[in-house]
Structures are given as C-alpha cells and as structure tokens.
Image (cartoon, rainbow, N blue to C red; front, side, top):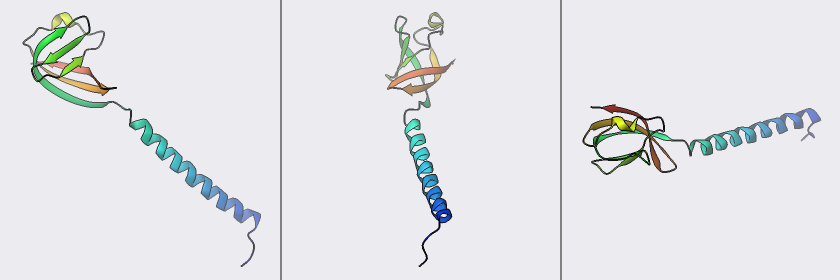
Length: 100
C-alpha cells in the first residue's frame, strides 16, 4: 500500500468537512423548525369576550388571543365564527376570522 500524497489527504479532508457541515446544517434546520408556529382552525359560537385581554372563548371551551389591531367592539357573544390561528408558546393567536 502506497502512502497517500498531500493532494489525496486534502480531498479526503474536504469530503469529511463537507459531510460534517451538511449534518450540522440539517440538525440546525430541524431545531429551528421545532419552535415554529403551527397553523390550525376552529369554529364555534363566542361565549365570552375579554376586551381588556383581547381574548375570546368559544362554546367548545377553546380560548384565543386576538391581534392588537383587531376591532373587539365588532364582536358580540353568540356570534358564530370560523377562525384560523397559530399556536405560539402555548398561546393560540388568531390570524384570521370569518363571522358566519
């Protein structure tokens, strides 16, 4: 078996470094996506509105945080709504709402 030349070692090292970099990038991207908000939807009748905290509760017991720019005065208890929301840090944040 012949000893490897400097050029061969350089090629081997480049492949090792490239493989490690690829593994690191994949692991990093997976950890970033673990904290990403997940979108979902829900529907029901509004049973309570907290205008101070900007939250609504539906008849199924789920509570949702409304965005700061939302016109809470336009909502009334008893309204049927269809909403989309993201869950961020355990809190359900409304991203879109349709009054039915």
